[in-house]
Amino acid sequence: MNTISIRNFTKRYGEQVAVDALNLDVEPGTVCGLLGPNGSGKTTTFKSLLGLIRPTTGEFTIEGKPLTPATFETLAYVPERATLYEWMTVAQHFELYRRTYARFDPARAAELGALFKLDSRKKTKRLSKGQQTAVQIALAFSIRPNVFVLDEPASGLDPIFQRAVLDLIIDAAAGGATVLFSSHQIGQVERAANRVAILKGGKLVLDGDLDTLKGDQKIVEAVFDSEAYSVNGLASDPRIRRIDRNGRILRAYVKSGAPEIAHELEGLGPKAVSIYDLSLEDIFLGAVSDSAATNGTH
Amino acid sequence: MGFVEYLRARHALLVYAIVVGAVVAFITGSVDYGIHNARHCTDSGRLCVPMHVSLAGGTSKILLGIVLGSASFVTMILATTLAASLNKENGRGGFAFTKPLARERVALTYMGIDFVTILIAYAYTVAVCFAALAVLGIAGKVVADPNAAPIAAGGLGAATMWYGLIQVATALRISGGGLVIGLSWPLFILARGAYSIGFFGAGFHAVVAALDHLNPLAYFAFTGHPDEVHLVSLFGYSATTCIAATWIIAIVACVVAIGEWKQLEV
Image 1 (cartoon, rainbow over the protein chains, first blue to last red):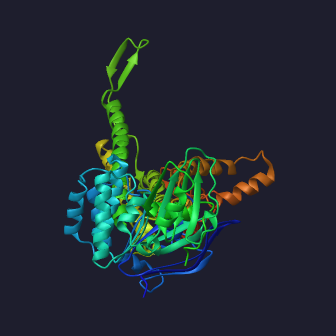
Image 2: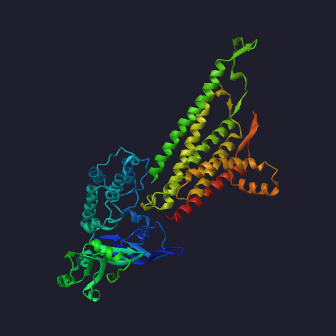
Image 3: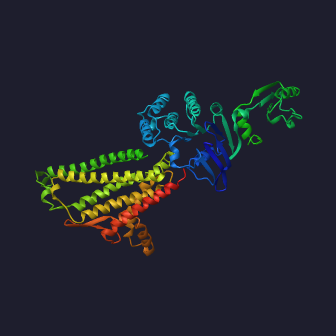
């Protein structure tokens, strides 16, 4: 049974399609990074999953059941923007959670408050944006949920606290929790996620296990003296998934045979040729660029 | 989530108590000062002598209905400040809607806390009125009258009706609850006054009359003389009809607001 299941989800605002026929399953214990450019439908997907907006079509289940208020006893949501009560103190927010959630763990809350150096007496309007995010993270993790839906969870945090949030996510997943999160910081996703789904224009353009997506793919990069160079027959080489030309720089996304292709490129007379491992950023940019093929989607 | 509304209501009640207490204390002190420092002056003000003034001798009785009715008007201020409680959750990215509580339960909890707060504010206001009268030495002149209970029921009904109407008007809005509250005061006061204006023609009057049926101030006013005070409506309805109308509109408005809020997308 998938922890999160999204079936044939479409959301239209008038003529505009925000999300188009999205299918996504997240298995238990998975950390799934949902990536996409601004306006690609990530937040719309989160909000529909949580019942905050109604889908045009589609079905959602969490832990095998449709969403009900009881679902939120074991599901924590951190929205894109901090939405705390600005006139309440940090301690009052924790008190609110203690009264609201049967699973609230005061010891865990204290531990998280200390981790993020939160002053419990401060009103949240006196906190920086990053500290407000930290309060939301601490609240979310203090109820020890089975499912996390985190929309830009490390937004506004300094690098130390960003790392702390990623460690919390990884730790929760190791304990059996399922995490669906979005971030514009691809390095964070690469560090925490073992599964990636990429949205573009409301459509799922890439979805899969991160290691599988990276696979044996490489980037062969050649730098030429001028922009006037020819790639001859490389563009139709079946070992090459895609070629990007950016001025004097050529990047070939190679499925196999990277050394041979590098050797062929050397024959074109570049200043330098290098071979790199494919990063998640490369996968992301490849998936969302206008010329991107969708052959990674499944 | 009731904890949030409890804190909000507690804060509103505290501010209300301080402001009402301060205003009543100022008025009472001013009157008391006037009594004790009254002078009778002659010869163009050059010759003044102390003069004995006592409120105790001036008024034979103060009807309880006047005290309760006056307190109702003041309590309406608190009722309206609490009235956009559902709206206050709407701009928070679903904070209240992603808790293990049904929305209607959250809404009912909020409304229940608000209503209890209105009752407490009403009782406090009546108590402050009695304290002021006691300071002035005329508390003993307050006498029960048969219309006091209908006036209290009508006053609380009008305050609750106002609260419900603002909830309806704001439950689907993401923000702007304070603006609606602020505009409701001149709107209802002007609408009540406009009903009496005859020079815009029958059409205007019909429109205003229709709107005034949703105006709490159209159902609640009290008038009479020192010996007798009545609950009166703009439309000449009986006291029972006015009381029933305010409470029915209040309840219907709250139910509609909950229905709207349940459907809200954020």
